[in-house]
Amino acid sequence: MSFYEKYLQYKDLSPDVFEHITDADVLRVLNKDHLLEGDLLVLLSKPAEKFLEPMARRAQQLTFQHFGRVIFLYAPIYLANYCTNHCVYCGFGTHNRISRRRLSLEEVETEGRILASTGIKHTLILTGESREKSSVSYIKDCVEVLKKYFTSIAIEVYSLEEQEYEELVNAGVDGMTMYQEVYNEDTYATLHLKGPKSNYRYRLDTPERAAQAGMRSVNIGALLGLEEWRTEAFFTGLHARYLQDKFPETEIGFSMPRIRPHKGAFQPKFEVSDRNLVQFMLAMRLFMPRVSIAVSTRERAQFRDNLIGLGVTRMSAGSSTEVGGYGSAEKTEGQFDISDERSVREIKEMIYNKGFQPVFKDWQAI
Image 1 (cartoon, helix red, strand yellow):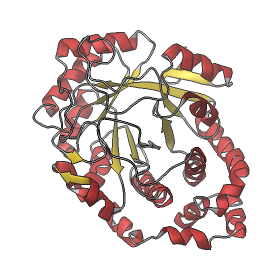
Image 2 (image 1 turned 180 degrees about the vertical axis):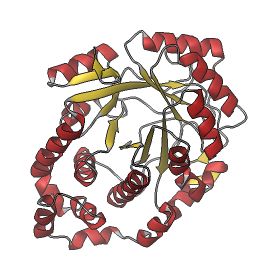
Image 3 (image 1 turned 45 degrees about the vertical axis):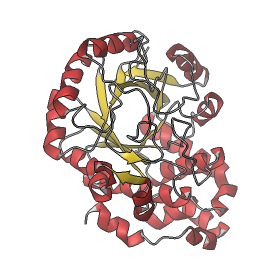
């Protein structure tokens, strides 16, 4: 069964389903060792909000058991912001009048050298979704440059074919992130008006193609605020469980990005509170004890601090969402506004003060 077939089984899932869940249902699930798909629905429900403390204790226990007291740190490098898609919510969308550029290999080297000097050894490289301006061969050339500075290089680019992912794996890429943005297929069509990204099914199958190509880690997620958060969280969990079951040797992770201000006038239709985000994270940790959970600098500093110990395993630090954001005098508008502007050093000290170890390189804390 493909994941799309799994999705179709629940496509007509209504937020009303959560209203029929009782406190007794939540307590029953909290006493289980292995959770099923229906149990995730229970933990994402409104009644489960009253049980966040026992959920947090259980989530902390599972996180320590599978990951220890460590937080992996990474930072993005934006290589280009050319895009051929009209996604109504994105600052890089082709409809937005922003300055566009692509880094030269010399500029890529400068970005890598400056970022690596902060201690970061894991980077996520991003491009806008333009095959012409950010070809696979260009991405491979950038990876060759950045391998001198980073022990782990992941990508967040447009959807690729399996063979193209194999090329990048062979070039040194070991991870990929692909957000479905919104799992509701009907809503997806209203938000992705033009361009290759408007193909819902092709994007949905992208993480599977990457895993099939041998990518060591695959990270997924939904952009929260585009649709009702509980149903989107549920489909994120289904997708992550599907990938983990099919590719047991691949590290499966997920992120919980909320829409942040950016170039353009789009306003999210659905509110996602801090409490909602915590419930999402706790439910996912109980549903998938081995899943990696990342929280980026989209979120404000105090909130990120409070998530440590509750399930998060990865955090970005010292991030810039601008092309050339670390060393270039010619910067562009960022993809979105950053909330946590602390330096890598400040993030590292915060993690130590929480009783955890910041990890920069393959389980080695510095």
